[in-house]
Length: 203
Image (cartoon, rainbow, N blue to C red; front, side):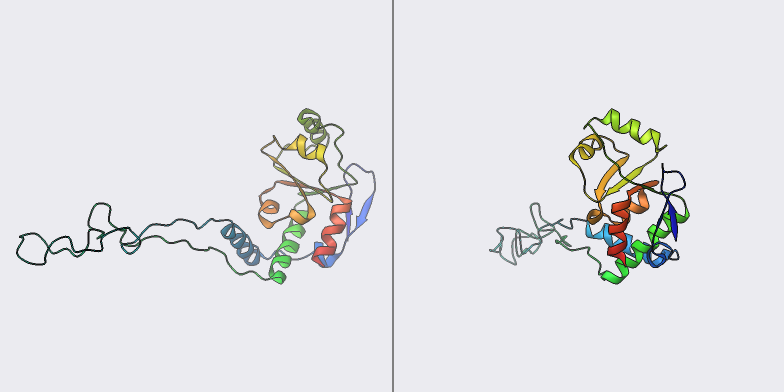
């Protein structure tokens, strides 16, 4: 299939149908996005149960004859400074997603971006100065006022510095692409070199 290059009159680029013309597989995309978000969770919450709390090795008073309730340890969950009854333990939220599923989800997402006209391809995207004002002007010439993901083959220093203060703009190279950033962006701007790299990765 052919894709129109933004800013170039009557100029197109040939891309592979096997990568950029796939059907929208919503269940697969949902599974991969959920797994990606779950893998980012820390899972480091931890509390001490009665075995982990320090002290309490001796019975605080004898079993009978004191008039008080039976007690075997001062670290009982019923006592102040005691252990937690159902203490939270560190855990992993990671879900297994194999490479074939992950690549299939990316193909489906990129194909849908093209169908929805949310993917723009330019010959190059270079910022001469590391100034946010100049960068915004460059985006305005392309009529990009929404949440934008810019993908290049290599992230240049000027581009990174100019875009880092903008909460609605992300700049990444092809290796750093993930399904969440693609789905969450209203527009995706990609250079031809980056598009070719992505095509090779997803074949």
